[in-house]
Amino acid sequence: IQLGTSGGVIKSFRAIRQKIGGGAPGVNVDVINYGVTYSDASKLVINLTICNDTNVNDVIVASIREIGTSSFTMLSYRVDAPSGGWGADVSVQATITELP
Image (tube, rainbow, N blue to C red):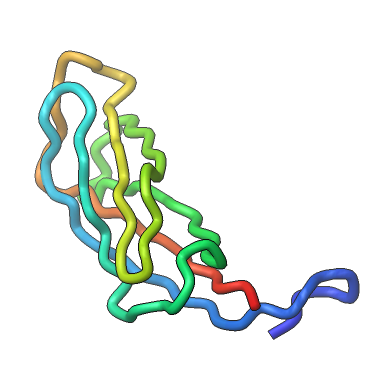
């Protein structure tokens, strides 16, 4: 796949969705599995979206700590109420782009 005339070739592209459930106050750590194994984690580009499946207005931010060949570790934190957790209906949606 090549996107645009000035872009490079993409080896593969995958979208995943995984329920992370409820979160405790403070920083939460989750491992998100790709469902496949890649040969070189340094060639992966990952984009995240956090969503609440029941339309609750919790504001949760996330970042990636480690990218492996079959999963990544994500840190998440509720910023609108730092001393509160969040409900059980939170999911992470991620796209994984593998560069050549």
